[in-house]
Structure formats: C-alpha cells, structure tokens
Length: 106
Image (cartoon, rainbow, N blue to C red):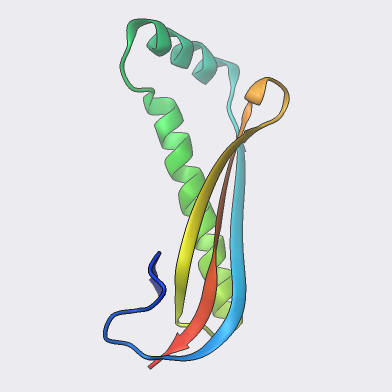
C-alpha cells in the first residue's frame, strides 16, 4: 500500500475517495528511561531510548492506518499527517496519531 503525505500519487489516478482513516499509538515510558533521559538532558546528546519508543509508536500508528484503509478496500492513503503529543501525569505517555484519506488508485 502506498502511504504518502502528498495529496496525490504520482503516476496514478485516484479513482475513488473512501474516507478518512486514522491510526493511534499511546506508549508509556518507564522510570529507567526517564532517569537516563534526564542524564542526557544534563550532559547533552540524544536519548536513544526515547527515540526507539517514538519510532515504535510511529510505526504502530502507520500500521493501524494502513489496516483501516485496507478494510475500506483502499490501495493508497494520501495526505497523511503525523501528530505527536505527551500525555498523562508527569507527561509519562507518548501518543502518535496518523490520519489521511484512503483512496483507490489505478
């Protein structure tokens, strides 16, 4: 399935718009990741633990988006938008949401 942030798929004609589809992932962080991230904040550098969590959440949201589009009979999703939020007490949870328009192309 083609998933793109653009409003069309180059070289393809959109035959039918099937509706808006979404995918969400909410992942909690744990105290050990928080401790090491805080150390990184002090000494500088990237937080690999958080980057892995963010990448995992993004992939889950995109997989869910594609599964929802497939259920509608789509072979592509156009206009995909990714949003990131922190939630919960002490911002201990990470949410990634993906949305786009499921389409059938030829």
